[in-house]
Amino acid sequence: MDPDEVMLETEEAMQKSVDYVLHEMSTVRTGKASPSLVEGIDVNVISYGSHMKLRELALIATPEPRLLTVQPYDAGTKQDILRALRESRLGINPTDDGKIIRLPIPELSHERRVDLAKVVKDMAEQGRVRVRGARRDGMDRVKALQKAGAITEDDLHRLEKEVQTLTDKYVKEIDQHLVHKEKEIMTV
Image (tube, rainbow, N blue to C red):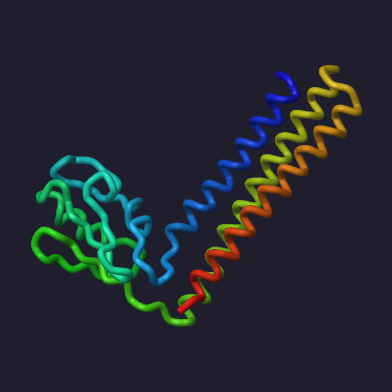
């Protein structure tokens, strides 16, 4: 394995950590309707005999800023979808008006906004931990290359600095997304 390959794999691992954090943050409700709030909900579809994601079973739209609509592709799955939405931890009560399920997004209280901000901070910290884990793996692999004689001591120090630079870059990116999401949550 060459040093360029190690650096590329380390950067990919860090980018995946950031992407994961962004995906997790997108599921946090901010008082605005967004399809990402519900698209990942698991639905036990009895007629199909399997579990599927809501996005695979229905068209999810935001016709108004505080309303989500869910239109099942197959009318036979509507009751399963309703059950999954009621059992989800979103705290949104779906209403069935025939062909479409409506999900009104209620106003968030200040206490709930503060709680959500804490949840987002925890998500960001988990992302930072993942990035630092990728840094540790990258450093270990670079040191193994040096021990094996594949790179010199100078190369080792240069590559360690590059790994640290990547770490700083991705941690900063997570922090920027955290600031943006906190602002979004706390804005009434």
